[in-house]
Image 1 (cartoon, chains in turn yellow, green):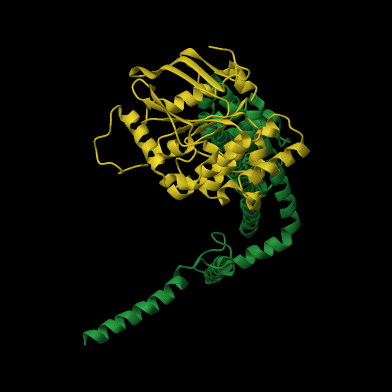
Image 2 (image 1 turned 60 degrees about the vertical axis):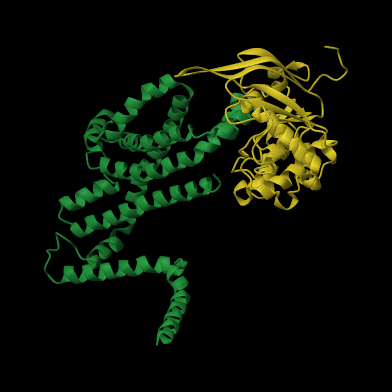
Length: 272
Length: 275
């Protein structure tokens, strides 16, 4: 490897993960090598049980690998977590129901000792960034699922992380809200310049969002293929791309990588 | 013919749908308050008629009017008795709540403490107050309120401990992950997530404990110790055949118990509003 001025956002080398269960050892991940460049948007896609969420959790140091190493911006994943080098969002928004939108977004800033004045200013910026200005003083149970997820994203961005880890954040949303949120996320990622690792099981979602799509296969979870999206810069994408021929070509490419061979079934069916 | 039937059916359906909302609409607050008040008045009037009819002897069931007279005559004594019993119950409730919360925190922090406490709590939950009161009265002396306060504390401890221990286990995995991702200290995680998640459970425990504390403090007075509390006066009045007065003190005991319960309920509602 040649040394570069900016270290890669994420660098995984030979990552294995084995869980011990009553039925014996289950290999969740095997021999994962992955590099994510600063500012790059990559998606992890694959069927349930392929270990994509586990890989994300290992990058976030919420789980540790059985063997292999993960580096985040040149330091260990553990140190990167302690240094708060990443922001994270889960499938469940995971907001604190007893705090308002403002209070929820302020949570990480509070925990890390940011002063009240600076905190209030940053929260105002974030509320505007995710377009929730009119709802700043509402409680989570007064918001729709999409709005709650936007609060979670604002919270993940609170400390201006250069890496955003997202575990199926739009998985529980309806299709219309989902497409809207995808475009919003592209805008936010472009504005903040953050690298994003995005776990999903939706092919169009992965294609629409990503610079590269990492296709994973199960038992044991490993990387089957990495498909670069030839769709222009992610930041420049908009909803009209969803009807573009190139978009469908990329969907086909990812689908073939997922199935390990050209798809022989009827084309154009089930493109989500 | 059939056309007439149809149109009539339509008309009746229209009427039904116009009436349906009136049937299903929630009762207004006036109705909610008025209905039980009316029922109460009816019951008291029936009771008065029954007691006045001579069918039931006065010592079995004094008339509401007789009880009312006693209440008016002994109001100051009732207030001071309620104050005494209420203070015992309050001290017991506070002590039992504090010990219950601390014990639940220890149990959630260490599995071994949980294992040690579980059988003790199970035993405490079934301790008969009747059996304990004379023992404690002897232990703390005939002129001390300590025994009664301890009994109220024991009764309050159990629901507070059980509910708090349960609440402390309700932390959602996504919140735990979040705290770890933020590299929050154990104390920060405790304060921002665990305690706040458990709080509504604790206050439900306190609500249940509030009635138990009053009942226990009151019943404990039946078994010796200084007089002057509601329980003592109920038994003294009954022993001296002043049945209407005994009933008057029972009314005071009900009011005291309700006051504890309603305050605890109000606090619980305020805490549980957003969870």
